[in-house]
Image (cartoon, rainbow, N blue to C red):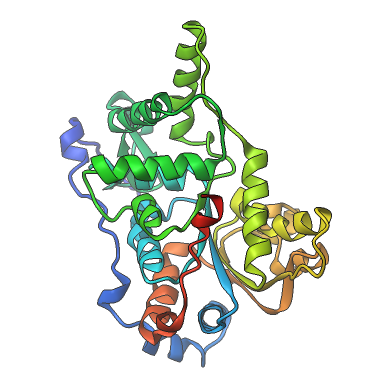
Amino acid sequence: MRTLIVTTTPNTKAAILNSPVEHIDITSFDARPIIDSMRKMSFTSRDLARATDIYNMMLEDKKCSIILTLAGSTSAAGCMQVYVELVKRGMVDAIVATGASIVDMDFFEALGYRHYQGSQFVNDMDLRDLYIDRIYDTYIDEEELQACDHTIKEIADSLPARPYSSREFIYEMGRWLKANSKKKDSLIETCFDHDVPIFCPAFTDSSAGFGLVVHQVENAKAKKPYMTLDAIADFRELTDIKVAAGTTGLLMVGGGVPKNFVQDTVVCAEILGHENVEMHKYAVQITVADSRDGACSSSTLKEACSWGKVDMAYEQMVFAEATSVIPLLASDAYHRGLWKDRSPRKFGKLFD
C-alpha cells in the first residue's frame, strides 16, 4: 500500500518564513557520555568516537595548529554557532570555506536576516513566485539575499582598487561588521576579533559574486579602476600559514574546494623549496560523498597520503550528514577542555 503525501504551500511569504533556524549551542550540553558510549559501538558511531579522539589529540598537541574547512550548508542548518565557539575558545587557528558558508549564511545573518525551517516536499515554482530560495528543507528570502549582495558591493566600492586575496577581503568584511552588524557573534566578526584568517578560494561561487560583478561593471562603465580577487594569493598565503605552523591538523566538514585547497599546501610548500615539510599530521573528514567515483571531494584521507598531503597515523573518515555529528564532536572537545592550555596562533598577524 502506497502512502500519498499531499502538501500545500501557504500563499504568503510571511506565512512560510515563520520558523527561524536556531543554532545549536555546544556549551549547553555535554556530549562526552555519548561519545564514550559510541567508542564501544561499531559502524559510524565508533568512527565518530575515533574522529573526536583525534580532534582532542590535535587540541592536546602543543605544536599542532588546527585548520577548519567548511563546505555544504551546515551553517544555514543550525551549526553556525558551533564554528563560532571553536574560534572563540581557540580550538581553530584558520578556516577555509566555501563562499556560501561565509557570505550566504554567516554574513547574511550578521546583517540581521535569518534562515527558516521549511519542507523539501513543496512546489518549488510556488517558492520561486514568492522569491524564496530552498536548501533542502531550509528557506532563504531571496530579497534579503540580494540586499546582502548589495552590501558586498558597498564594501568593494569602499576599498582601494587593487587585487585582494579572499582573506584580505573577508577581513574587510569583518571590519565593516564591527561597525554595522545587526547580529554580533558572527563567524566573520569573531575571526576578525581573534586574528583567525578565513580563506574562500572560490569566493565568487556564492552570493558575493553578484555584488562583486556589479562593482566591476559599474566601475568599468565609469572608466574607473576596480578591485579584483587574487586566487593565487589565497594559495600563497595559506601555504605561508602551513610553513609557519609546522605540525597541522585538519577538521573538515564536507569536501569540495576547501578540502583540496588546504591539503595542497603541503605540496606547494615543497615546490617552493621548503625542506622537510610535514604532511598534515591529523585529519578528520565528515562527509556523505561516495569514494567510488574518483572525485576529489570524496577521496579518502588514505588516498591523500599517496599525494604527500595527509599522514595516515591519525586520520578518520566519518560518513555521516554533518549536522548530526559535528555538534557531538565539538561538544565533547569543548567539555574535555584540552583547548584551555592552547596558545592562540593569531595567524592573521602574519599578513600585517
